[in-house]
Image (cartoon, rainbow, N blue to C red; front, side):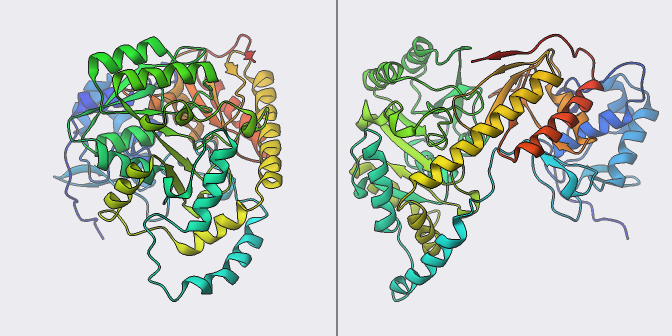
Length: 481
């Protein structure tokens, strides 16, 4: 039975060629498979939405400087994989297979055999099951009420406030609001503070879903490039003065994707800039607890400790515990926290009571669990760096002090091509361009190490095989400490 023609816009051949970027693996080999992998990556990253109509074969062949036979073979491959559908007289359009597919990757191998280095998210800790059992016993206390708590359950807010206080930022539970993850926290902040057309300062590279959220709010992300060793604080101040952004979105703790961390002196300088320019900042501390070389309680205080009235702090349980809890939080001055709770009613009426009880149990005595998790992630990080150093010595790796990923400097502008080639080796990658506000970053690749070391060793073997299909690999990797 033929598939119904969906509604959707048409992408021009020149625009599609621009999105595909440097997909070619070499002039002397059949290129239909490489082209199919590159286009498939665009679909599964969301840059070619379902329903998008593709240009005619002749137009696309001309834009890519290929034979029409090569383009036809590419489309045939994607039709077999159910990523495009076609009808005579109507052309071809983007679709998706009937089975679930991860947004940032796809493999022709069975899902159990694929390795995902695109998502920097760990599996749940062993302690989760016991926490669920304990939370179940406490649930009856809340069953007589409506189940809505826009600010969140008081016991959980008390645990989070205590954690901030121990890190050098005195906090009361009335300054904390529980959210459905850090992304939800960002969406609430944008809705309250940023009007359509206003600017939001962001680091570059940065967390791509944050840029997506800013654009979804019809705001304009304004990038300030990170220096190789950290933040360009004079550049941030110049941008705040000249561009007058309504908000700054910053990640001073193990910045995603670079893994950089801003020291206390830099935080004091940045906080002074926020005060002078009267700029509010949303500080994403999703990775703050993942200090792999030390203890988060001994690290630099939160940025809000230097400019409390200028900073809203967002945190999350996803990285340090488990993304399946879908819980995060905002920490702000009391009045601002109440305003955020008021805005929340237009999005949802509160987070899951049971999940909040589970997280409360996990944070009642978190030190043993968090210390064990940090030790596991540190071992995984070191395993991956060692494997990359041995097998891909041309790459440049900065050893991050925390977080869950490596930001790898490649030996050529091959990031998108490598992500496309890795698909055929059962490996999910996300190219560096995804972390650039305006694309680029083809000489960079983020690799997650949030998996068992044995899995990471196999992943680097697959990565090496994928890299070998490209040109320009070799030389020595430099491990920067």
